[in-house]
Length: 446
Image 1 (cartoon, helix red, strand yellow):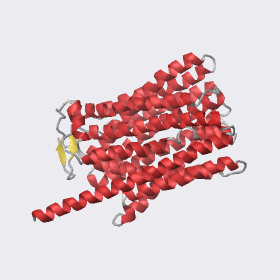
Image 2 (cartoon, rainbow, N blue to C red):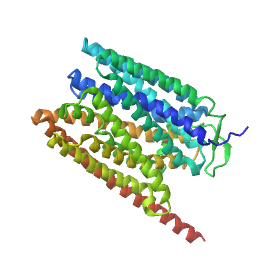
Image 3 (cartoon, rainbow, N blue to C red):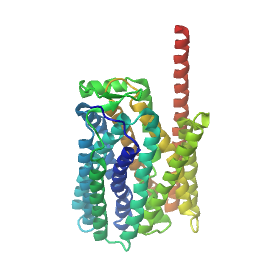
Image 4 (tube, rainbow, N blue to C red):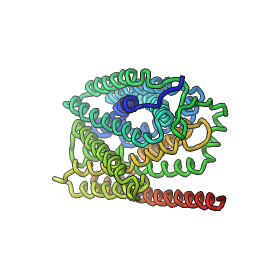
């Protein structure tokens, strides 16, 4: 029996899975990171290395995507990945608490926890995005991607806000209880949301018609080689890596920055992460609404939003650097919110492009393509997070003032955003050149 394409109800249910995934991840990359640096007074490089490890595991995303292509079912990978992720989230909190009494043992457990987190995120996230790309009609894909990502950001905001509330007054017992509760709730939500969403081995063709999904009979090496040989997939993977390197360099140092320079408590800095993700939510809405309204004009182009979002992000992070130098009554929350808006504009445009390109190539290799871009993003995030924290540690060695050290690193990140904007402009020009070449070939043939 043919499977109907996913309607909005099905899309929202998949969005709940993404919400659950984001709820676990936001605590491991923000709250636990801050506790290690501020409360435990450990080098910022430690959480940076742990998060880098979790991203390094995601280099296996193409292989996991290939596995779901081969079997034709995404649900087992989504549920299994979420179970591993939930266990890793709980272990990460327990490991952080253990560091207070036995640093070496806590670090060893944290290493295992972040391996599980990386594997869980990679397997579940890749299968989820591939399920969207292959079961949503072409005319709905961009809007579906925006909807799912907005729901993930909503999970960030709600989790960061509620967790920040229940973490004060702070204790390590509270940290473990809150993290464990979030992990359990996220896994149960995934089970309920995904049940029955995926039909049998069916997919939606490029024309939007229903068709049985062919098995991916090629070996993994052959499938990955063929995808990399596709010019559009290869160019986009390179752009994703560079742009996400700029995007991620700020993640692991914003909360320690707020605690060190502005004296915020763990609960307050966790709520600050909620403010940032709230800005990301607004930025995504802006692109979705304004981009759809101006879809037939140049300003409605996804690449235009990518370039503009990168430039705005550079200005916003430079503004935060200046705020740290000024200190005092500097409006930190509005500054973080503006950064989130700029990041959201850039991110949702990149996601929309990714969803559109996932089914553009030949063969039943949507999972491999999505895995390739996910791996590029994960490696960039791992390097960005680690390099950001390492840069702070190095800057603190040569700069006495903490605010000046953070400002120097933030300004370097602003420069990275400008480089990403330049690459996006080049990607747009290459796309336009390819289009003109195709039109010329058709005209000549006629």
